[in-house]
Length: 223
Image (cartoon, rainbow, N blue to C red):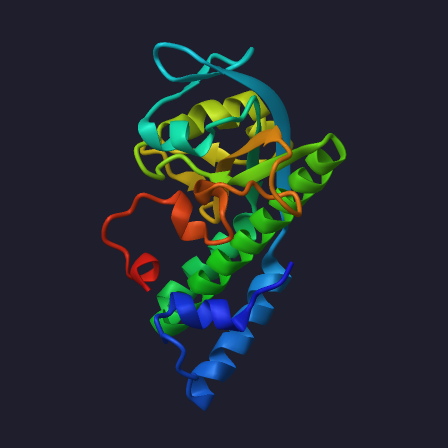
C-alpha cells in the first residue's frame, strides 16, 4: 500500500500549498505509523444484474440497487463486482489512542488512514479491471452506498452476500458504520469493451472520480 503525501495535504485542504516543516514531519511520522499498523484485506465477487420495476437486481442475492444515481452509473452493464476492503482494526486503535494525547496527530493519522484505504480500493479496482479486460469487458469506477441516492443501508446486504464478517472481519453497527472504520464497500460495473485501456468511455466512468458523485456542495468537485 502507498500513502501519497500530496493526497494527505489535499484532504487537509492545503490546496496546493506546501506544509511547514513541522507539519510535514508529522505527516511523515503518521504515514509510517499508519502503514505499520495497517492489515489490508479485501474481497470481491462477480454477479449478473438485471433491471426490474424496483431497481437493479443483483442476481441470486436478494440485493436491490435503487435510485437514479446507480442506474446511471450502471447504464449498459450486465454484470458487477461487489467489493469490500479494510485496512484493519489496528489503525482504528492507533487513531483512538492519538485522540487522547494529541488531536493534531489524530487528525493527520485519520487522514493518512483515509488515503490508505482509498489506495487499497484502487488496487482492487485495478484487479477487477485487469480480469475483465481479459474477458473483453471494461469497468466503471467504484460506486459506494451513500453516493448519490444509493441508500447507505445497502452496506449490510453487501457485507452479508460477501461473507465479509468471517472472511475479512468487517462488521456493521446499527447506524450503518463499518468496523473497522477505515473500510469500504463498493459496486463496480462491467460492460462490453467500447472504451480505451479497460475503462468505460462514458462520462460517469471517466478518470475524474467526482463525476461518479452527485454531491451538490463539495469544494473538491467544484475545483
